[in-house]
Length: 384
Ligand SMILES: Cc1cc2nc3c(=O)[nH]c(=O)nc-3n(C[C@H](O)[C@H](O)[C@H](O)COP(=O)(O)OP(=O)(O)OC[C@H]3O[C@@H](n4cnc5c(N)ncnc54)[C@H](O)[C@@H]3O)c2cc1C
Image (cartoon, rainbow, N blue to C red; front, side, top):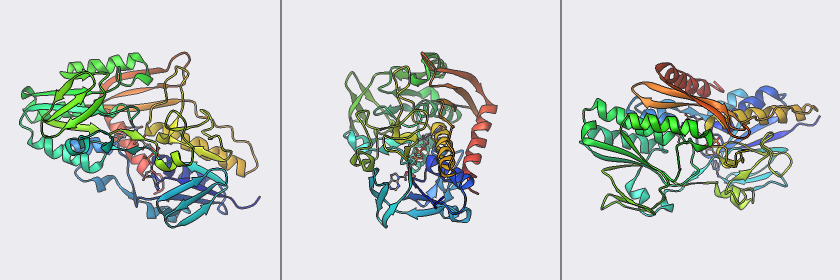
């Protein structure tokens, strides 16, 4: 058995989980190499806590990737410039690397510039710095109209805009300005989290209604006018005093250039093994598209990136050991949905369900919120 090199492209949630599991499962002579441009790892779920002030600084949830070396994982800090999936080579800003296996975990790129006026007008919930800016804006908010704007689908973490709306409601009530305020979610979706099934969507709509939060479905924003505080949609216009935005997402350009993406705009993979159409090249997490039996695509969420990373790591390790890997991604997932007042609802189930996903939503409770914090701690300690 010759020594193998596994190149993991991207050191976010999927990439780090894959690396940690490969290191645990493969003998030390095999190299596990993470190529990542950023020096730190953090979970973006913490943006919601940065937004409410429960967490003050983005650095609080960060871990340095330099710690990977202590655990036998090589980290190359570099920009990935091109990928040759046939040769399994990766050209980066610090040189070219060749692997026996590639695990692509490059996530989704966000493009606020794709909607005219969006970048100038909207505070970006999906950037830690944007979440902090939202907090400052909420601290000074004297009443008015808060719009949470989902620019395009698909986007990462389909529950996040609804969590943000509930948390804004909670913060404004705490500050005594809720009665002078309106909160509305504008989204291209028909119903929240449709891929989880209409029961979950209806339950989320009830949570919004109970809190007096407007829901404006099927709204595709064309442009935002920062001077007039106006978002223009195909169907209607919306004025705002505070605009919280989720920018358009796209597959990383480097994957499009490598012709790894298809007409869905994302990287198609085998729904069980996560292998791309290239043998030995796998893709996991937000960069992928997996069509569900019901016809929609699997949502982009960390819980799926995490489980897919386990599947790929186990199967690669088995193959290196001369066995046949049998672990398959089965479409099961869960999420904790913050609703404010220190509570979260809990959704879980099978997204691969036939004929439709079988996902249920448990009502909000403080326990689920605690579990969400524990989840973050577990994920952060992956390699510590
Ligand atoms: C506000 C918010 C809340 C969320 N809450 C939840 C939640 O509660 N539960 C849940 O399951 N999910 C949640 N998510 C979604 C979750 O964060 C993502 O689904 C998950 O991070 C996807 O993992 P990934 O490995 O595919 O991509 P990422 O974690 O985005 O990692 C991709 C990595 O690739 C690197 N990269 C990209 N291109 C290059 C390049 N060319 N060269 C070098 N490096 C590159 C990036 O720097 C990044 O580190 C949330 C997301 C947001 C924004």
